[in-house]
Length: 213
Image (cartoon, rainbow, N blue to C red; front, side, top):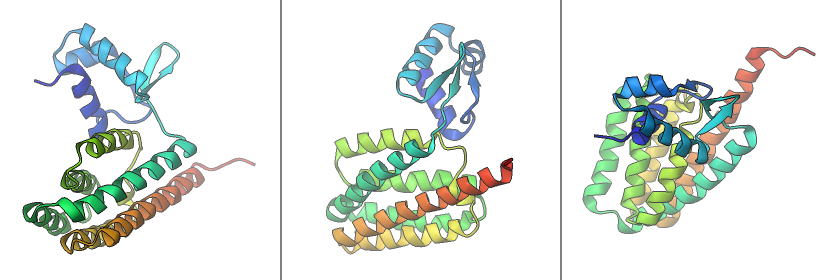
């Protein structure tokens, strides 16, 4: 049985609660079938981790501003690139086959951004595990937890889903070839393209809102 903290975190990660949503202690306790005390403690913990922020007397799911977004992608690119390099060195043949199978299977869900987003997280986590460095995995878990604070997935952008799978295949091919330099470079390019896509989407959404001059 998951504790209240894990339950709320999973709900944020899955999109049940999205950036800007208000979290009410009594409603959470009822939803998850736990008492209010562990919920209160979980909310306090999530606030200290900047997953939640104060809005008056209430707590809401935090949002990332432009600078936070840039900082997050910078850290993610460095850590993920290192994970890819280490995976090229340490991944077992079985792990390489699992990664290749993931890319193959993900072609079957093209056109479903939410399903692809979940598959994308699994793919990247598998690379983290294939690095065989527990401390790196822990740090990447923290980074990917913060990724849940993004309101939408870049995989919904036109054409991004197909390109993403091509980039994933390039990463897997480099890991399979035991080419650490190429794996690192491919992963770094992949994160850079994802960040560029997100910036374009953020700019488009801001423009769609209509600015009065």
